[in-house]
Length: 264
Image (cartoon, rainbow, N blue to C red):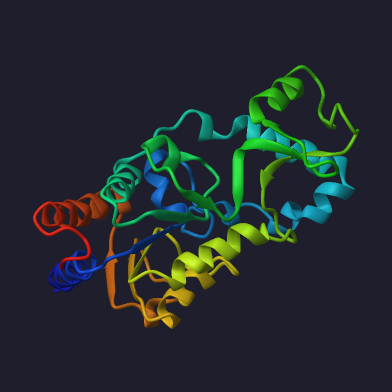
C-alpha cells in the first residue's frame, strides 16, 4: 500500500514539474547524506550526540576552547573528501534545462556547485571559506586549516587581528539579508517549489517554501521522513534524494525536449 501511495505521489510530482514554467529547488542536509555527510536532525543526526548550545556565535566569540573545537571539527570533517551524488547531479541537470534557474540550499558543503549547479543561494553560508568577524575578509578554508595543523589553535586575521570563523551561519547569527531576500523573491516567482532533504523546521530558511505557497506556487516535498510543512504540500514523495530526483528529472527533461517550458 505504501509503495502504491508513493508511486501516485511521484506521478503527481512529475505532472506538476512538467507543467511548471519556473521551478525553485530548495535543499537541506538530506540531499548530502548519501555523499557521506551526516544530517542534523535525523535518527543519526549531529544534534543527537552534540549540544547545539556550544555552536552559538556568542559561545564561539567568548570561548577559545569552543573555537578550538570548531576548527578541529572542520579539520576532521568529511566535506573535503566526499563527492556529489545522484541527487546533486539531478538538480544540476534540471537547472541546466532552464526550468530551475535558482537553487536555494541550507547546506554548507558546496556539493551543488561541484555537481554543476551555477546559481546557488547558500542560506547558511559555506564551510569552504573563512571570514574575519571584524573586517569581513574572506579566504579559502584550507589556508586557515593549515595554520591550525601547524599549531595555531585560535587563528586570527593577519590583517586586522579579528577572529576568524568558517563562513557559515551559526546559531544566534543572522542570515545574510541579501541572500534571504533573493531566495524569497525567487520563491514568490516560482510555479513549483521542490523541497528536498529537509525537515523544513529551521527558520527563517523554511520560510522560503512557505513563501512559494503563499505566492500561489505548489510545493513538492522529497524527503526520507515527515516534515513540518507536509500539510502545505501538493505531493510528498518518501525516499532518498539520490533515488527519487533522477527519476523526476528524467521525466521532466524528456518532456521538455518535446515541449519547451512556456509552451506546456
